[in-house]
Length: 335
Image 1: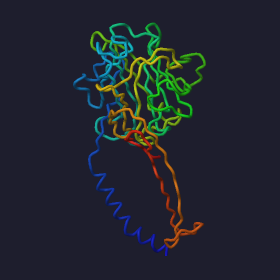
Image 2: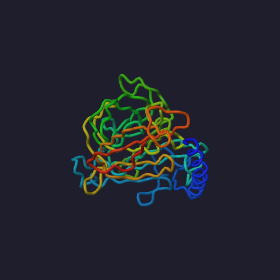
Image 3: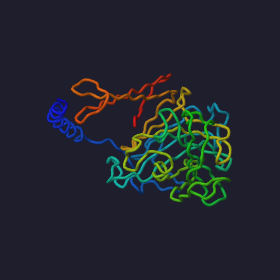
Image 4: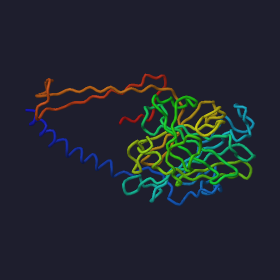
């Protein structure tokens, strides 16, 4: 009876499912990538667009809480005072074509603008705390640090770290143990034993004639399984990745004292969410959530549970995903 039932449902449901797939796949894909040569890492910034009109495929977020004279952190007008955060992903086709095996993500771009008329110098770290799919929702599994040198080659050092388990909460900036995984320069700090990949590049300059900004290009491979992440260059793996931006004092390999974080006008810290298939980026409130998943399985033969699976039996797996709060969890991905 089980075989007959399965055969019946295959004959009825399969054509319906195929029809549904054809219907949904016929719609337009909302995607915004930049082309492979759109953003030049030279500290000139022109290709990113303007604050009011970012270039197509570029996403712009403003730190409303700590800017200029209204900076509540006590670091107004310094290299620690975040102003704008920009990000983009590049593919060969760019524009509105989704990432796929024929349109692979190549690089991830970040730009951080600060409120300072002075030269950005060592002693100031620009940090991006990330969840690349290895940790549960609300947790951070990687940390990207950007360190600027006035008299060095290259002038911008970029290091990706992986957090050790237990992963800290996203926004718990000074907790968690990290290990350096990959850098664009050799031995960026004592004890570093990670891989050197010079394909990651950075530059800085005055983005408005007075204040300084930094732009970096990160190969998408940095966010993949080699270094503990799950982001794949075809847009799969970790369908979304997210992170928070903050500045701190200290040396590469440590976080130091937190100076400024990205936030909304009401003081709410924010995190960014990137869709790895479409390139779309959104910003949401930084929340505290606790996500758990439990799996149960049952074996059905003639629609009755039995203790062992026989040929033709139906196996039913049930996964319950629970958020015990205290905040609402958006963009939760189950893998």
